[in-house]
Length: 449
Image: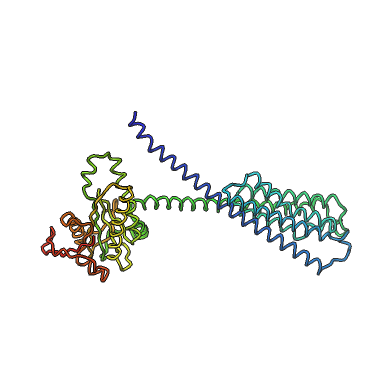
């Protein structure tokens, strides 16, 4: 029964993670849509405010005299007030959306339709106001074109149904006004010869064009939204993959592998290789459970990896009770040996601090450094590759690390590393030339800690 539960739990956990990821994507998308709606409200408020100013200024310049087409003075102040009122209404919406963005809330769907209805009713109100002075000619005024402007702005909501709703309401309102003005009032003499039905059909065609504008805007918006969602999900999946991948390799290696060509060819680079080993790890693990051993290793590797990364190095591979790190590949800043030595000393100091604070049981480590040329890159086949470092520099660095047991030291470096340090390596203590396994010539070793 226990085995069954263990086999089921991973899939449940994976499903739960997938659901959580989808919820995060949905919230992120909603957040982006709200930002677009906020922009739309601000644009609409500015346009209405500018129209109000323009109307007031234009009314003062072009002061229309009564004529056969004008039954009464045009209520300019009322029209300006309506425009200003709508501008203020949009500013309130802008503030409300801003509040929702700051608090993480969403706008109820019904309110989106209410706002759309109020907005699309603006040109209808302007036409009705103007019709008291211009009767039939009010249908020929610029407010008719505001329908198309509002329908276009509705596309910024990225909602197919609201675009259709906006176009439908605009068409219904315009056709209703046109029916009223072509049938319900007395027409000027020049229009008496045209039948009401013929006049109405002209405006019915306009209404259908307004409806078509809403449908087309909805279709285009829906297409854009699908593309937007697909791109957003693709980016989210890529970030998730990179996050998971980045837990297994160094971030710089991840970037290198993601952008380089699919090849197994390596490149020759000058690198500084670090080998780190935890002393007496076998004895430690014999008396502890696997969980305790893993927890112990993680507590050490947590700060060690951070220090290596911060000093422009990468963890190339874990070796059970230690790891191999590389400075100078895949990228170098020209101070690879200095970075490796600084990282080594910082690791030793941090370990001593953690032991003194009681966070880690007393632990001894050994570090060996050597620099030289190595082949770096993807090694393997087309099915399985590994970014690795190959060369004599790796073997010698490993041999130098193992000498820490012989000299009871924590940090040993080769002569080439000491020379690369310049004056910074003056504190190095020579241990003389040592015969290293696998090499005919003895190697001069220096102790730094």
